[in-house]
Amino acid sequence: QVQVVESGGGLVQAGGSLRLSCVASGRIFSINTMGWYRQAPGMQRDVVATITSGGSTNYADSVKGRFTISRDNAKNTIYLQMNSLKPEDTSVYYCNANVKDMIGRRAVDYWGQGTQVTVSS
Image (cartoon, rainbow, N blue to C red; front, top):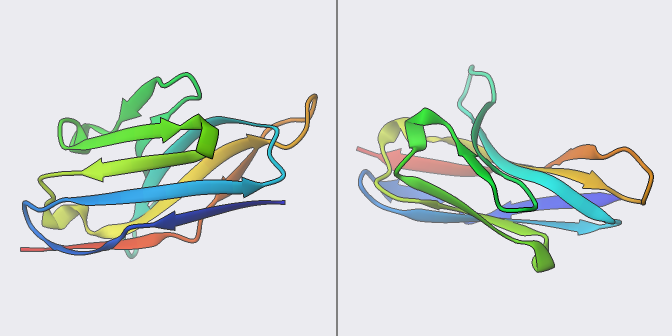
């Protein structure tokens, strides 16, 4: 089994910064893409940023230039540095990991439980 755990959420004023962390653990052979998603109440879950095992990144237009995703493959960990936060960034942030637990097996998506980020105006 694979566990994905996020940390680092909290309450911050507009213009401030937060850093989220996500670690995957358990039966892991390899991890392909990892990413951050967010979901506000009553809204769909949207991608924020993703990063491949080779370090290629993609960002939602709304966070480009403000958020930075990074990855430590040795630790099965990704980070999301969030700067210049806005009230509209308020959401539950979820981590996703596309994990292969054994050579020859198909990779499966695992999700964390989410961490709340609240940005006050």
